[in-house]
Image (cartoon, one colour):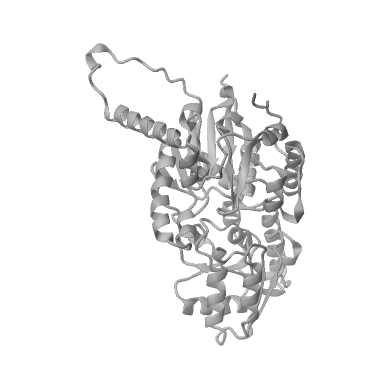
Length: 463
């Protein structure tokens, strides 16, 4: 009887930071473990307290990883009930203020022992490998699957000299995913194309959103009023998360949209500027601090307006559809997955945006079918992931030395493999130089974790 394969899911964030790369890999780990066909470990970054205060909400702090693990498991249990069995491990990380993200410190492949190095899932493979220095992922693990979450090129283009930086980043992303991943899953075609990649949305929604949608469906079928409020948007309050597009649309079409009442919910670096811009409008647009999208305050809104084009697949759009709401969004590759949903109305022009918004406010949502409701679930997302990742049984592959008659012959596959190994060797070499790392944007002194992080993680201190 073959042993169960081990899946190690490495990601770039952890709760209580409510970001996509903290939430979605956590659900993926839980639902893969729930399926029962694999042993699963979720590997998340550990931040020292100085960085925790910069990242985690409400000044939340953890003294040791076990404390944070307890928080993560409680959060998950509140949402899916009885927890499936899976491990949580931590790797050392540091927060980059410039990139507004967490970067790994040291060789994080060491977090998983060699006897469990079957399958690695790299959530944000570019991010996890830009500055990787240590054992090659493909050498450590039998199979490495990348899941691309973020449209980095779109964000970079909005910065100073953005198109030049985006050109360079595009080639770096393609390079590192090629040398470190056997296969890459792109959540939508909004992301850049990289070698050996396939487009498939392998994310689902928190099951409580589906339960809210079922309740709304029941209210509508009993001819009760299910939605009492108008339009809203929720998202991290930074301009690049759709607020630029939304406020421009509202400002340009105040006359046509007169009477529109809309609430914006979010917290972030640009919150004060967003609020100031909203206050200049003649429309009734109110701005509130961020909340969990599952909060009861959102249940009675009928229309979710999301003009963002920087997302890869917008989690809040999926959640709004699961809750039975009408969604107004741009006809953009990031929204392709939602086209099959009758409550998702997509616009191509500003004129169309106005027409669809007014129409949505005047009509009732169409109740979701069981089939479409299932498509939004983590059960369906896990089925899609297993299929496109092609996670099969462990195969015993014996390496044979070439016979003497073929000694001088090198097949195209062997040549490609040799070139890839040379490329990986080169990346490993330059990522080992502090100056080169810093030139390309790494946080200084992140080749190895410092003594403080080793102590917090319970690792042996360096002599």
